[in-house]
Length: 474
Image 1 (tube, helix red, strand yellow):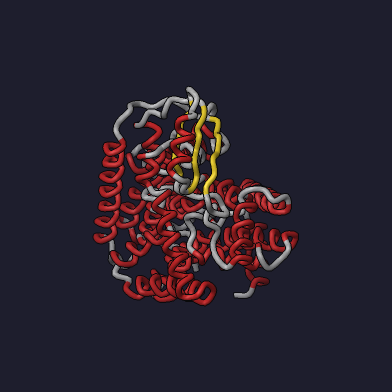
Image 2 (tube, one colour; image 1 turned 135 degrees about the horizontal axis):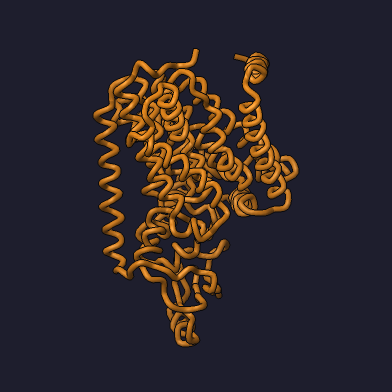
């Protein structure tokens, strides 16, 4: 369908909507426009996250290799190649607005795909989950991040997989995994659902969008070095490092609410001291000894293997006065790591069991897909506030089932609807607290995701028990 008829149909539907819904649509549009304008302004003013991405992408274009101390430590070369047109080939005045525009289009496409192709109870409105996620969309857009790209690829890929276009859908999921590695977890969804062509497509997608262009750009040896360096950087920022060396990672990234970081903040007492002397890179042993001997009372020395951007080594003097000091206990790192590993294994094991038992075709695939997109948060060592846009499919599923329960006149005091109301209420509070660093520090948004995950499981069971109530929009 061409854009003109789609826009005309949308306008006609809006004319027939109640005034309240029209105001909600207007509010959503305002939120997204504000996010887009802010994103463009940040790009033009060379502000984060445009500034570090732009600097590192231009470095690769100019030098032919990734900077030793790149801020894009978790990204495969695919991401750099995808950003070349916006950040290396075009002036910022053109590339910045175009890049923001692609994020806005990706957000709109994600909503349209779910609205058009995801089965849902009749009479339900997608506007409510879109409203709930709109601030998260705007945050991702204004941060000039890749969240919206991966969201639309994930939603489109999973939709194609379930509409029997497995290879194409798998390739899209592979591209999402190559852009930002967290969607690689969706390979488990494809395998457990016995979508073999989709699983093969994911592998093919990673090869086409990562290995092939890496070899073409860096050469065989250069591509090997780039991926070896990526594995090394991933180890430096791993969950084990988040827990074992919290001052180095969990406290450096104060907006990170990953599961491992939050566990470290609650279960490990932060080191006493007012200043952190951090040595980045690999300095000579005698230099380290000299710096250690010269430490003043209240100074803490940490060794960070991540070098400065240009390589070599440097000393950074960081203030720790801002750091929250509360923790429940002070357990050894190995104990906290064991808790993390056991709970992650149990959670993913439960996901696999649920998916394996639900591997037959049916409209319940929407709740399963949403569950797997939520699962991307838990094993990741990094979780930023703009990642929360990935929860949009779960919001659609939970809102739809809850609205259906209300329309059917079923008692909302039952555990399932009560859990859904709690999840959506917590989400609203989470959105209200996005600008509160202390709330993110101690993992409030992680708790919100936990409640939303449990509510999505309820939605899955409801979909399976009442498949006749799910329909695909015609």
